[in-house]
Length: 310
Ligand code: 3HC
Image (cartoon, rainbow, N blue to C red):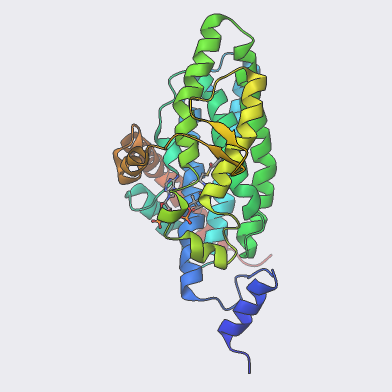
């Protein structure tokens, strides 16, 4: 008689999907709730840095593109919250965890966006890093998560391309525009490398997540892949990646790079980044200001339920 654990292990070994109704170890469920809810929070909080420029975009076309992108991020958050809910956590619980500061979201969204060029750097670097991290997640062993990633990755590639195009336009502009673009790349490059998580030897979740085929590659492997993608694109843009030690090592077949400032990473994760408090406050205010909508929708649903079946 096959035990539940043996059946689960066989599905994982056979590269099969685990679905919500399948038996799964509590620890697998817990890890997925942790990662998927944090991923969803990241998408929702990630709307703020870019939302900052919707009313100040330099043209109607740029405004329309940016609005579409921010709207996409909201949709990504909803897909991911829905995927997390299939594991038994409610939307209210996840929202409460976020607005009370108990939930993590990606460190990258705690940095300010002082110039329009930040919209280009976020698209090119942050969405570019997201693509490197999210494409393998399309093959995550948990069905709802992998399937949500397929749609998200298609939209993410549009996000990355529009960011690249903003930077290319600036780099083909005046000296001041070129300087603005380079300044934004200087500010976003290192935080985008931190998106992939701590070094592999300081990543407590990676080994188990990879054994369960949630995570397909390690943090450092994806970071290397991302840098390898950036180098030729930076040349086309004419921007300089702000790492004087960055070079391809023929011997190790890896990118040598300067040490990432992991103290900064830890500070941001501890809530002491440049914009953590502001992001938290904005999300909490949006939730409080939206209470009347939720109440009205609930009252409407209650009244609908009282109507006789037609
Ligand atoms: N920001 C915040 N927390 C981070 C982090 C980051 N950049 N990198 C790692 N952490 C946290 C982890 O959550 C973990 O804490 P926890 O155990 O309390 O959850 C701790 O640091 C140790 O890290 P590990 O490497 O052990 O953790 P993971 O195995 O979970 O790996 C991860 C971290 C690579 C971020 C992984 O969780 C992951 O791939 N998540 C899904 C993708 C995601 O969330 N991306 C965030 C950006 S979303 C985005 O970019 C949207 C786009 O539209 C712009």
